Amino acid sequence: MLKTLRELIRAGAGRRSASLELMRAGAGKRSALIVGSIAAVLFLASWATIHHGFYTKHQIVDTPLYQHYGDWIMDGNVPYRNFSLEYPPGALPAFVLPAIGNSTSVEPSAATVGPYRVRSAYRRNFELMMELCGLAAIALLAVGLLRLGASNGRIALSLGLAAVSPLLLGSVLLSRFDLWPTAIALAALVAILTDRDWIGFGLLGAATAAKIFPVVLLPIGIVWVWKRAGKRELVSCLGIYLAVLAACFAPFAIAAPHGLVHSFAVQLNRPLQIESLGAAVLVGLHHVFGLAASVKNGSGSQNLVSSGSDVVAWVQTALQALALLGVWAWFARGEANRERLVRASAAAIVAFVAFGKVLSPQYLIWLCPFILLVLGRRGLATSALFALSLVLTQLWFPYRYWNYALHFGSLPSALVLARDVVLLGIFALMLAEPLRREQELPAAAPAQGALIQSEA
Image (cartoon, rainbow, N blue to C red; front, side):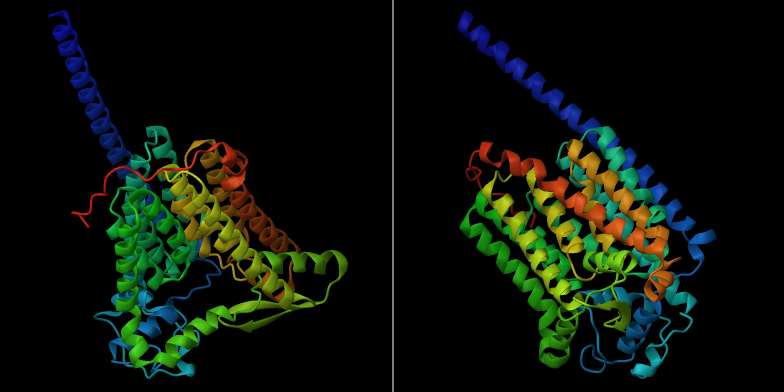
């Protein structure tokens, strides 16, 4: 009798505990919804603000080039065959959709890619598309933070920083399409976080087809699925990833194989761009020791020419590869939990950007949501450094860019180097403590049960 009574009491306590957990979860979702709505309004206000005042001065825009691409495609020209394109096929929607209904007939030629006034309709449509991508990123960030169990205060901080990021970085967001691949890559990571691996790998394939940088997340995703769901599930996920890539690339590989290969060759063979870490160091040596240096235009950027610049470009590429291998190895050696998943993902993208031989201002757009997913004191520190990197970038781009590119001005040179060093600091903070704790972490056993795939 007493035993039965104790069992009933325990069962009742268990039900009450489960009810409390459900209530807390519901309250957390409602709070996140409120905070997310406020962040969305704040993002819209920030987006509107960068259309006015000093944000409109000295702009350096890519929108006219995107408009050309959109017009040519709307006129029936085939990318990579009828005109050169440096971006992968998944970027095409960002160029074509704003041109629907307002394109003009222009024959593709080198002469038509010069500077000219972009049509207001195209600019408005393009900016609206990027604005929607930014709102989608905020919503996805909120979902990811909820899944990670972030506190209401941390959710508010991360979403708030994402919402004001246009003010911190400046008008470069208005004329670059990088919010498009960033939103897709973030959607892929959030899908994997929420145990929808098939969807996540499909989105990761789409993100890689839009801009190559999300490929650095693939090894992390492979380790995640292998440890938690096993080999069979991993084969399915990789099949979906490759199928999406094939769907994006195959039509152009058939129609214009040489043009498609050329687009990759252009990116791989780019010289040392003046904003990269190695170039910033060489420019610093130019100021301190008189190292001879000049700038040469090419590959859509201004590139540094100096003694040793080619060697530095190769060294940076090697360091980039080593940093990425280090991140992947760190994640593979430890436990496959969600906190380490988002940290490894953020560290991989930071490594790709910080050590690359090309580091354009818009690359910081890629970093924003991934860094803001990292929790704890490390997340606070890296988020603060990331905000600093945005401000440092805006202090010289676009207002002092040509002073740096043409004359190696002292102030912009110092700001570029400082920004690049801050990015290195973010990368170091992402992995410093886990590397010290690595020996204390037990090997992760595969999770029991298959992941839910009915929603994939």
